[in-house]
Image 1 (cartoon, rainbow, N blue to C red):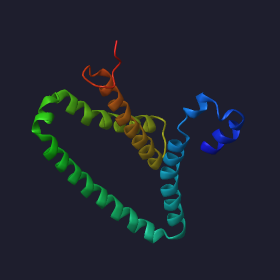
Image 2 (image 1 turned 180 degrees about the horizontal axis):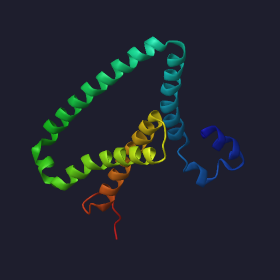
Image 3 (image 1 turned 60 degrees about the vertical axis):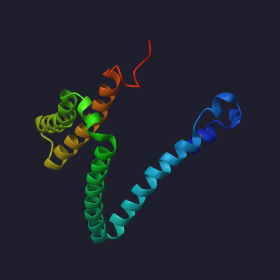
Length: 150
């Protein structure tokens, strides 16, 4: 994408409008996303057993890191912050992704997809539901910094 932007916008690259485009940030984001994915695909293609071991190690290290992160966040922010958030927000944060997983699996079953496709649809729907839930919570909370100022 940054290469296409550069190629197609060479004629007017020095205009003030184009200087607003964050080409460096876009390039960095694409590289930091695509390089690990490409490396993972290459390892999976060439060294299947090593890829399985790396996946197990990565998942366990992710779990340990998340637990440590939650503990440190709770310690640094204190229980006051967690107490100020209403219980309904916690309920929505837990149930929204689960509803997405369930609905995705249900719709995939309704269309008689194979089991591996049902799991894929369920996972995609649930994961996208998390982002949607976060956006709705941020935009609906009047004390949030992301809401519009009228």
